[in-house]
Image 1 (cartoon, rainbow, N blue to C red):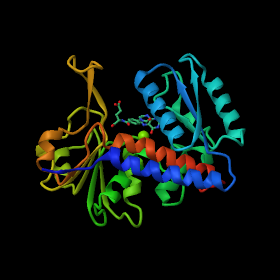
Image 2 (tube, protein in one colour):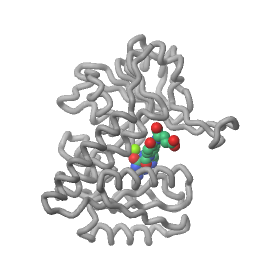
Image 3 (tube, helix red, strand yellow):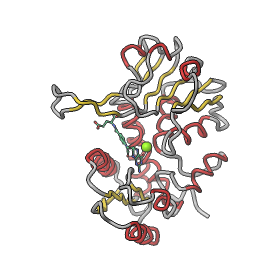
Length: 293
Ligand SMILES: Nc1nc2c(c(=O)[nH]1)N[C@@H](CN(C=O)c1ccc(C(=O)N[C@@H](CCC(=O)O)C(=O)O)cc1)CN2
Ligand SMILES: [Mg+2]
């Protein structure tokens, strides 16, 4: 039976570190870090993540506001809001909650955020820096996964990490991060068109599932003793549950936990780290740790 990587406990540790650093920053005479969160429309999951972010921010002493726009807002109006926040010296971090409505081009919106305020790390400048191994904002989910491995004492050097999923918010940046000097994994990236996926996942020392399909990774796809990181957050109907649905990951947890050496649960694994690392990025934005240009 695998050891469980407790994302809630590790995220609480990271938040406590951010809180202490924010206190020291304010003690030194600076105003508290300030995060502007943009939420477009009424996707209930997005609204709940945004509440989670602003509540967690308040708990560590980071000020924030949520700018909530009607789903019909035009792309031009959204870009104008971003331009205003870019120019406001009291705004340290800007975050646009994804997904955006279909009539808005997400690249155009993300590319409009000043890279030194881009606490999600989705701007091409930060993505490029990550690829080159230069300092910049690293997206919170991949950064959180690295913290889970590091703080659980899991070795990455020379290990074969197999990332299933090539999204811009998880798979691609995580693959880049795992290649960094000091992390030094050997990385394979798989996706929906990969042939013979199971042969590749079975070769993984560290298997990261970021596919977005409930329980897609089954026990036969996992090597005995592998480390399994489950990024999936899938809502499946469950009339017996108070919310009417249950969250399950991209990994068939019970069966895979019998084979793995370490595994992250869903909920309580990667998800809470995403919020904790966003807070750390926001602190760094206030401290201008990643100045641009
Ligand atoms: N602008 C962004 N949009 C999105 C990001 C992001 O990093 N930046 N990531 C995801 C959603 N996300 C944050 O936005 C997120 C997802 C899940 C969690 C989380 O804490 N999950 C909990 C369960 C919560 C629940 O009960 O519903 C867990 O896994 O334990 C936090 C943040 C897409 N959009
Ligand atoms: Mg994320």
